[in-house]
Image 1 (cartoon, helix red, strand yellow):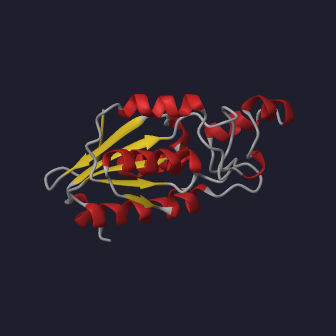
Image 2 (cartoon, rainbow, N blue to C red):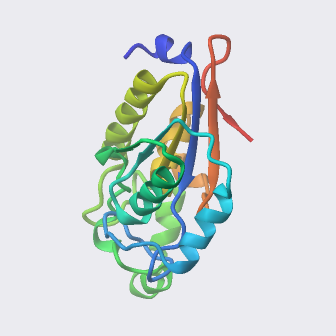
Length: 199
């Protein structure tokens, strides 16, 4: 898709991160933990009774998918599963907490967060490959649902990739975007303005 064409399309997309999963905070990647009770409360509190979306697009992982299906069924909104919106694969870090990693490999988190391109976890999905699958899915979403109000239920990494793409950020700055559980961000654009992060 030509970038100038995308930049002139109507974009009304909200990005929502899943709530807290069972097991609390750790590096999950593709580990398919469901939402905890607290995670359900977090996501329901953000949405409330307000569901203005015409389409929901979700990661297939349960911490996103289960809430997307619930929301779609509750408000009669169609739900589309997008496999390319699975979280970044963290390789050897998957299933581990930050505290465990600090004990096992002191300094590894600092190196990663300062330059995740040069210091990825062993066996992790390369950031360029991750962005290379997320952004085409994002562009197809805009192409197929342009003008509709769309909710994307996904992961912090997916949201970082989309926001970084919209803002033109380099990959090594991706983790300078901190996105909490059940965070909701909006991307808007029209024929005058290219897609932008709305705060």
